[in-house]
Image (cartoon, rainbow, N blue to C red; front, side):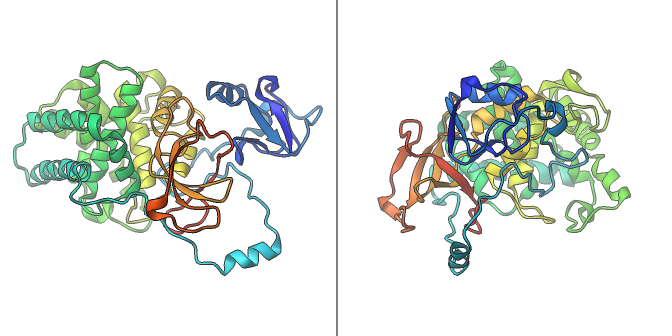
Length: 412
């Protein structure tokens, strides 16, 4: 394996084998040109060296020919694997031995139902569910009720930030789906807005908009919103009408502000102008709507739906990073990744020494080197109370080799 100083990399360089950063994290696959933003990302995250088993390929095709990308028509809400890593080859004997083993499964968060953070998180969902139930039944609700919930959410985030993120990844509450996804979107949107250093009053509007962005779903038939199979064209058009319904509820029933209304109306607009309902693009989209769009997409990917299973936080972050300015504002993606990390809190990861750990905290300036708590030792023995908390930022000999699906116990 050849080690290369990251400062010597140049855009357009092509290598005959994958280039890795931090162990087995693929920076760029074989025969795919380096881009300037790949190099900038390394330097921003303080990664000094990369490694590869290949060499620079002279006279390779120019950079634009081999851009690794998602299909143009892929919906980010679908459970589609985005392959950014080449599978690691395994000897046949090891493969047969591994097949005989029962994979170890880990819950993403070990929740005590009477703990303060969990009770608080569950309480927020119950309050929002009560609001949605009243709206669905045609009972008058004042916007002040939503204001109070969001004010409480902002206070709770100061105390339970990491716990709330772990609950989102853990899917701890399996009912009140609309209320839960709305609270999760509000948590993620608030943290992103704070990372972008928006003013406090704007952050409150964003929390409210995130909480109400999908309230229009209450105006659609359950047969459509809960359908397990594919949607017909007519049903898809009805789904696409929910931002307009949300806008009407906010303005005509709750008498909410213009800022909150824009978030709900525009949260499915795309950076490239191919969204709905108004097909606006780029900076013309309200900043709050841009933030909620990213939070909503991430929440949808990590949450189980009636029509598909959830994906891990690591895979969801990879999908967002692969967007390439089609759906999302790149500045919002950058802020979101800073607050979540490449391996979000609660993620189960395998280290280069063979041990397995849970991510318990992240460093916004070094997202590949979070704080972890070990679950197994190098031999696979479950540690339980003997597990150790390790800051990978200070333990340079250890690094994350890959993420693990918490349900199956296999590589994510």
